[in-house]
Amino acid sequence: MKPGMAVPRAAAALALLAGCGQVPVFGQAQTMAQGAHRMEIMLERHEAGAWPNIDPGLVLDQGDQVRFRFRTNFDGYLYVSNQSTSGKYEQLFPREETGQENRIAAGQEYRVPATAAAFRIAGPAGHEVVYWLVSPARLNDIPPRLGLPGAKSPPHTLIPRCDDERLKARGDCVDTSAGPKLVPRDVDMPQGLSDAATRSQRDLMFMRQQDKAVISSPEPLTGPVIYEFRLAHR
Image (cartoon, rainbow, N blue to C red; front, side):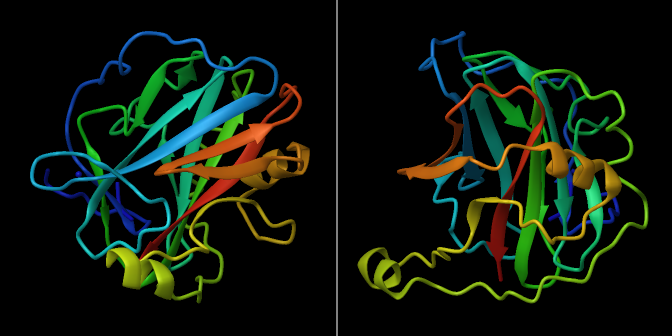
């Protein structure tokens, strides 16, 4: 997946389809459930001039344009990076092309990219691993270490597979192993991410509500938390 209009060359398989200017948050502040800290991610795909929500596990095609919407019930800061199917890492947000302001406010809905841009699916078939790092406080030591030019791990060899029942019922190729997940303990990551993963709480709960992915912690977050969102593509 590469971070595009004219598509710049990028290290990861998510290409950014360029736009310009910061995009305001969606709507007005809303009150979300108090108590447990909760994060919501919605994946959107460009279709005939619109951006409908899609199933987090939908197997995408080469050239598909996607973006995310994100919301929490607590204030904090958001950092997003990607490991492509070839194993290369790239910071997706914050950066100049996707938006520099990464502070998030409770109840507000944000878009990633935060500019008038989108990500284009490209590269070998497999699972893009998009890492979401959320922290109650700004992590001044994270950018630009998330990018780590040249950082690379062995490529993912997991090939997307369709859920036969979903395929028969709706005609959609949905890979049930895609979507939001806890970061495995033994995975190799750049230091900026692995340090956060080491400090991160491990008792996160993952749910799907229609086409929305919900990640929640039973206790308020006292430090950074990291999890992954796998994008399956052919």
